[in-house]
Every structure is written in C-alpha cells, then in structure tokens.
Amino acid sequence: MQVVAHRGASAALPEHTPAAYRRAIADGVGAVECDVRLTVDGHLVCLHDRRVDRTSNGRGVVSQLTLAELRQLDWGRWGRWQGGEPAGLLTARELFELVAGVDRRVEIAVETKHPSQPGGRVEQALASLLSEFGWADASSPVRMMSFSVLAVRRMHRLTPAVPLVFLLDRSRPPYGDGALPVGVGCAGISVEMLRRDPDYVARARARGNAVHVWTVDEPEDVVRCVNAGVEAIITNRPREVLAQLGR
Image (cartoon, rainbow, N blue to C red; front, side, top):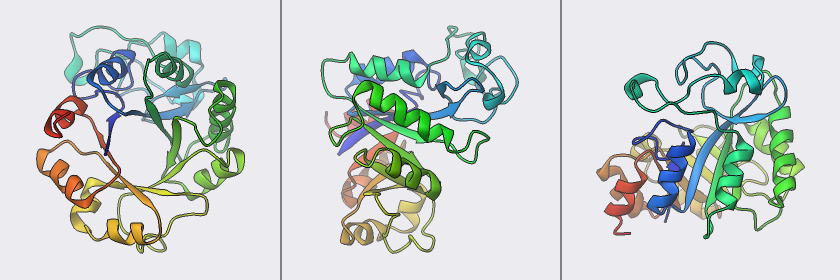
C-alpha cells in the first residue's frame, strides 16, 4: 500500500511548498500529490485554490496572474503558519525536478483543477511537461487525476500510456458500480465515501480497477483502508501514517 503525501507533508509544513515535499520524501513516502493550475502566461504551478488569497499574502485569481507576479508572493506564512518561514511558489516543473533528483523511485499524483478558465490547456501543458521529462510512457512515475470526466478523457488522448485516476467523493451514477471512464484504471475516492460505502472497493475491483483514498489522516481511517486493501493512502500526515504501518 503506497503512502502518498497530500500537497507534501502538509500537516507539518505549508502545503505545496518545497519544504513540505522535501520533508515527505525524507520521511519515505512512495509518492507525493500536487494540484496544478495554469498561469496567464502558460506555466503550471502547484496550487489548489482558484485564488491565491488563502495560501499567500496576495490577492487574485491564479489564471489571471503571471508566474512572475506569483513569484513575488510569500507562500509560507499564512493561517496557522503565521510567523513561520517565508516560502516561494513551486511550479510543476520544479516539483518534477525535485523528484527526478531523488535516489529512489518517488511517484507524483497530479490533479488538474476544473472548472478553470484555461480549460483543456491545463492537460496540454501537463502532457508537454511529461514529454519533456521522458515521463509520457507506461513507466512514468506520474499519474494524472481529476474529478472531471472531460479532463481524464483529454489526458488519455494526449498521453495514452500515462496512468489516470478518476476522483470521486460519492457513489454516483454511472460510476457507483465501480465502472470508470474509458482509459482510467483507478478510482480516487474520499475517505468519507469509503466510510459510507465500504463495498465500493469490491465493486471497483470486480471491474479490474484499483482504489486510492484521500485524505486519510485519522488512525482509524488508516485501519479502514488497510482492511479494505486499497492500493494507496493519500494523507497530510505521511510520517505518522508510515509509522502506523510499521515502516
């Protein structure tokens, strides 16, 4: 069972910052997770929200700002991190470079955020970056994730060999029976969905699909995932989850 660091070790350090990813890798995770959005000048950046307000000292919409403008903001001192260390923006390219420099295989789960103003250009930019790194084939350490059926279909057309994860927060038609969009081999379900519908894992397995669960931070939910036999746990607390699993 793979332990995946959600936005890096984001319970210990500000999410999507270089320090959060370095901590997660040092802790021994098998994969890191990031959200990506496209700047107005065409750069993929590791940010969850549509706006920069929550996680920086700035204001505005990511898709309306340039990379240079985003670089000017402090991404390390917000919310409960007030008084901490300043941090710069992390681009998808920089995260890929960080992971490529690790002396063991570390995978990357990349969620493209939709709906967004750039639309399909997000997947196009990701496909281009994967090709640049030589990661567009079946051995790629990167898997693409989205709640958007259109996005995963688009990515399948652009990079047919790259693994895809369709995200679900509830059992909903036509995917409640374990089926997934064409080309997708894994369901990424919320921990709340696993609690409500534990039999979903068996239904997905019956159709040949893997299951990853997000965001698993409580010890009892880790046990629930172990009992269900899911392939990956996505967590804000990778060090603690690894310790609970005896690693």
